Length: 163
Image (cartoon, rainbow, N blue to C red; front, side, top):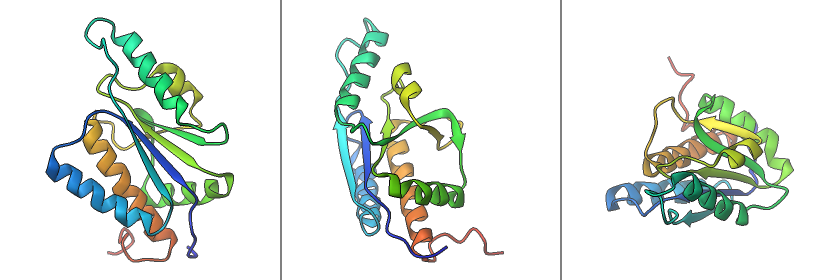
């Protein structure tokens, strides 16, 4: 693939700050991603009343997420029931969409993502069929964005075609 600069990426995630070792790794991958694209992150605190009415809390989290999105964003909801992609497929998908403007990836809380938000997404992406804690999903997404970006830039980080 020819070297290419990707467009802007927004990562919105619901939750609390991760334990320090995970935050350190996450920040490292965010710095790596920033070499290739403009990355913004927004943390949304979990909604109040989760134990009493989880559906209402989920709707509140979804409404808060939507406040951070632009109408022209390509909305990508992370969902274990979404489409799984290889790193190469993710790189190609990112390259195809980069001229369209900002890509907004959203990671839900332990309650998941609001159904209306998932329905509004242009893409539902699964990092795994397993349910992942949002801290780990955030780390894995940033690592895969780095791999895909490096691949598009002609780098050697992705070695999937060796052997």
